[in-house]
Amino acid sequence: TWGTVRDELIKAVGKNNFVTWIEPLRLIGLDGGIARFEAPTKFMRDWVSRNFAEQIRAHLARTGKAVERIEFLVAASRPAPVPLAQIAERPARRRPMPAVVRGADEAELPGAPLDSRFTFDNFVVGKPNELAHAAARRVAEGGPTTFNPLFLYGGVGLGKTHLMHAIAHELRTRRPDLRVLYLSAEQFMYRFIQALREKQVMDFKEMFRAVDVLMVDDVQFIAGKDSTQEEFFHTFNALVDQNKQIVISADRAPGEIKDLEERIKSRLQCGLVVDLHPTDYELRLGILQQKAEAYRAQHGNVRMANGILEFLAHRISTNVRVLEGALTRLFAFASLVGREITMDLAQDCLADILRASERKITIEEIQRKVAEHYNIRLSDMIGPKRVRTIARPRQIAMYLAKNMTTRSLPEIGRRFGGRDHTTIMHGVRKIEELKGSDNQLAEDLNLLRRLLEA
Ligand code: ADP
Ligand code: MG
Image 1 (cartoon, rainbow, N blue to C red):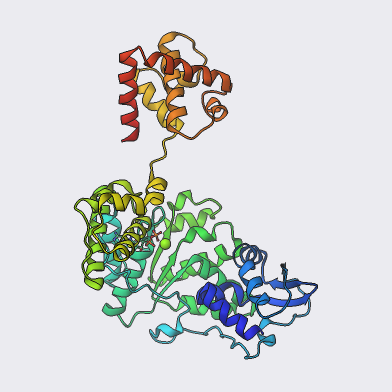
Image 2: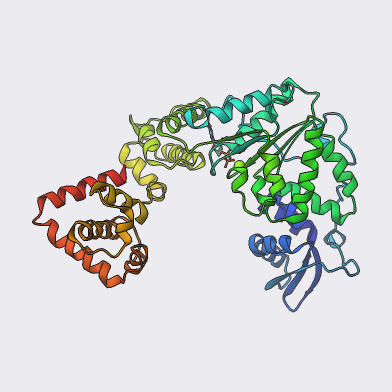
C-alpha cells in the first residue's frame, strides 16, 4: 500500500528528496506491470526518472504488485488525475505554503536545515580561504549591510556551504530578531514551481520578500531555467532595495555562469565577489589535524604512525570532502584492526582514493614544459617544421604524452596538430631507442618528468 511505500521511500531517499521530488508525483495508472506517474514539469520528470525510478519501482514491487517498469509523463493541462495522497491509507498532509514569515520563527521559513557541524569554530582558515572567511564573518556580525550581495564561489568541496551555514548559525545567536533564510537554488526553484502549481505565487513572493537575510546556495543551478531566473531576479532586487543582506554561492564567478541572464550577472557582481581557492598543503594539514582531534575527543585515542596526516595532506586532492572521507575511513579501519595504523596500512586502506587523487597531467602541459625547456615556441610543437631542433623536442613531448597520460596514440596525434597515430608511434619509438645511449637525453627526460609531476 502506498502508506508503507511512502514511509520506506522516505527512509531510502531522505525526507528532503522525498518532499522535493517524489511527493509531487501523481500515480495515473498501474497495469500490465507498468506504473505510470505524472510529474509537474519536464525537468522534474527527467530528474526523477534519472535518480529515483528504480527505488520507486523496487518499493512498489515489494508490496506484492507486479511492477516491472515505471513511466513518467509530464502533466498536461487536463483534468487533475488522482494525487498520490489519495491512494494513501493514511492521507498525506498537504503542507500549505506559509503566507508570510511570522517573527523569526524558523519553522515558518521554507529553508533547508542547517548542518550543526558547519560552524565558524569548525572552519579552518588558511591562505586559500581567508578572504571568503573574513567576508562571511563580517556578514555574520549582522550589522548594517556593507556589501550586498556577498558572492562566494569556488570548486566543489572547498567550503562554500560550510561558510553559509556558519553565517546562519552565528546570526541566529547574535541577532535572533532577524529572519534568516538559507536554501539551495534548487529548492528555490522547487518552491517556486510548487507555488505556480498551487496558484500561490503571491504568497511565495511575500514570503521571500519578508526575510532579512537571504542565502541561496549553488545559484548556477538556475542558469537556463527561465521563469525561475526571472523570479530570482525580482526577489533579489526587492531585497536589495530594502537593504536586506543577500549571500549567494556558485561554482564559478558570476560572469562565467553560462545561460544566466546578463542583468542577473551584473547584479550579482555589484557587491563583494570572493573566491575560495583550491586548498594548499598547509590548509589541508590544518583541516586534517582539526578533524583528527575532534574524532579523538569523541571516540578516544587512535594510534597512528607519525607522518600519516602529512602524507594524506600531500597526496589527497584539494577537495576537502574527499580529504574528510579518507580520514573517516582510516579511523573506522583503525578501530576495526585494533592496532597502530602504519603508513603501509594507510596506503592499503586508501588505495582507491589515492589513485583517484593522482594529479592528471595534460598533453598541453607537457607540450608547454618541453617547449620551455628546449626554448622553442609552443606553436612549433604542433606546427609542421621538420628541423632537428624542433622535431626532437616534439618527439620528446610525444614520448612523455604516451607515458605520462592515458591518452591513445590517435588522441595524442590530434593534439599534435592532427598528426597520424603512426607518426606519434614513430616519435615515441625514436626516443625510447635514443635514451638508452644518450645520457643527456635520459637526464632531460628525468628532469621533465619531475617538473611535470611537481
Ligand atoms: P562546497 O559547498 O564548497 O562544495 P562544503 O562546504 O560542502 O563545500 O564542504 C565540504 C566538506 O568539507 C564539509 O564537510 C566541510 O565541513 C568541509 N570543509 C571545507 N572547508 C573546510 C575548512 N576550511 N575547514 C573545515 N572543514 C572544511
Ligand atoms: Mg555546497
